[in-house]
Amino acid sequence: MTDMGEDKTSDAANPFMPSPDDVQHWASVMGRAQQMMLDYALSQANQGNSAAALFDPAGWLQNPTTKLWAEQSARMWEQGAAFWTSLATLQPSLTPDTDAPRDKRFADPDWTANPVFALIRQTYGLLAEQLLATTRNIQGIDEQARARLEFAAKNMAEALSPSNLAITNPEVIKRAVETRGESLLKGLGHMLSDLSRGQLSHVDPEAFEVGVNIATTPGKVIHETDLYQLIQYDPATKDVFTVPLVIFPPWINRFYILDLNPQKSFVKWATEQGLTVFMVSWKSADATMSEIVWDDYVAAEVDAIDTVRDLLGVPHVHTIGYCVAGTTLAATLAMLAAHGEADKVKSATFFTAQVDFELAGDLKLFVDDAYLALLQQLSAPGYLDGRYMAATFNSLRGRDLIWNYVVSNYLLGNDYPPFDLLYWNGDTTNLPAKWHRQYLTDLYRDNRLVIPNSLSVCGTPIDLRKIAVPAYIQAGREDHIAPAVSVWRMMHHLSGPKTFLLAGSGHIAGVVNPPAAGKYQYWTGDNDAASLDDFVAGATETKGSWWPHWIDWIAAQDDRKIPAKGARIPGKGRRKAIEDAPGRYVKLR
Image 1 (cartoon, rainbow, N blue to C red):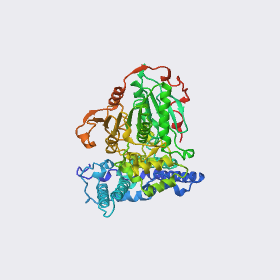
Image 2: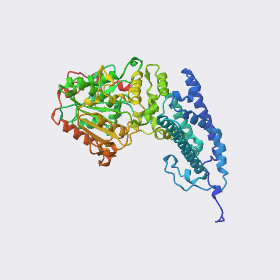
Image 3: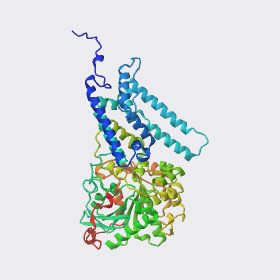
Image 4: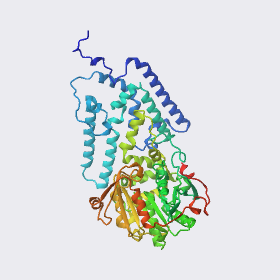
């Protein structure tokens, strides 16, 4: 008979220790892991790449802590046995930490209940806080230098989190034990695949195909230049607004952020509201575009506007400029005003676009001489590989966009999620080197766009105060790329009637928020407020998508409609169809 008072915990399986029966399987896993790394090194050598570049941050994520993580992971096999042994022989004097962690990196119960991991978490928290506090208290440096140091310290603290190392993450260890090492092997495969691509994957690269299950709104390419293609989408209503819409997406990433799946597509929704929609699809830069500068993008926007006006026989168009293309749209409008051609544009909508860069946030940290010199080196072919820009943007939210996926993809060996927005985020575009340097120095560093006549485009000095076109200015409350306080500044520089709208969420989800989703909210208020804080203080919150508010604003500019026939159908006017949407430019690397 069993003694009811006998302690049976010694017989319970230790979730942090493989069973003796699994030793042979673990040996097999280790052998396969070594073979995978050898195969990768040989493939790199055959491609002319040194095996030493395996963990070269300049060629991968542009983050020196990636090398540290990779080296730690490579030693995981040897350290693992010793670590598991130490856990098995813990002294009972250690007591669990009862404070529940709020940080989702430490959501696993063992970060709190297990005394070892609780101690690791608490120690890390104290060290991270001390690192940031020390940085903030450094004396004798200017505020810009302090901001750079704080940014670097924050990224270092996030990179060195114990959750990012297999050996100090209880969830990873338990998963490895449960799967007998297969999760680590799968994660290693993910890591080596990403190293081959030179980019961190957020989703399965094979999960989506542009034009097949993403960017599928029907239409035709009806015009193209060496810099862009112009897509006209099929009408979705019997009658359409007389004034068409021309959308200028950013050329950092692809246009189809506004045409993801049919449920999220702004383009599809806009056609269903009765708009004749045209989309610019920018060409990803290559060596032939080494001389492209900002003037060329302004000229392209004017060309697209004139092409649509001529095709449909209309005096003017509605325009949308998203992010950098919105900044460029402001310059385009100022140039048209200077030429007496402002009436070519009926209205201008700006999605998370900046013209005044004084408060542009953490991206201003990337415009010092050292960074510009680095860009010069990286842009030797005449263009900047889009993966560098992706790494820069990801570093602004490193915890969410880098280390979260390092843990999920590499350490836990999870399957990639089929998330179209993350697929788009990884579908990078190359940037013309001259334009990129001009953008960073003239706008981010020197803030010249808001100085009247300081900049010229296409030979014309521009002054934003001459823009009298009705403007709809949308900002994201949590935008880390174009902060709302920075976007708000546009309200002070344009002269025409302006409507400001603050959307919930950030740079992407704050824009791509279809009504059917029922997500987030937006705020409207006093467009004459002195500051964003004053606007927010008196603003009215509305639940859900802001898109219906925008289409009502569009209709208020001109609500006349005509039948959707003739040139309103792609390829039926003077501009014959070149190819089906989404066109080939969006697929160029």
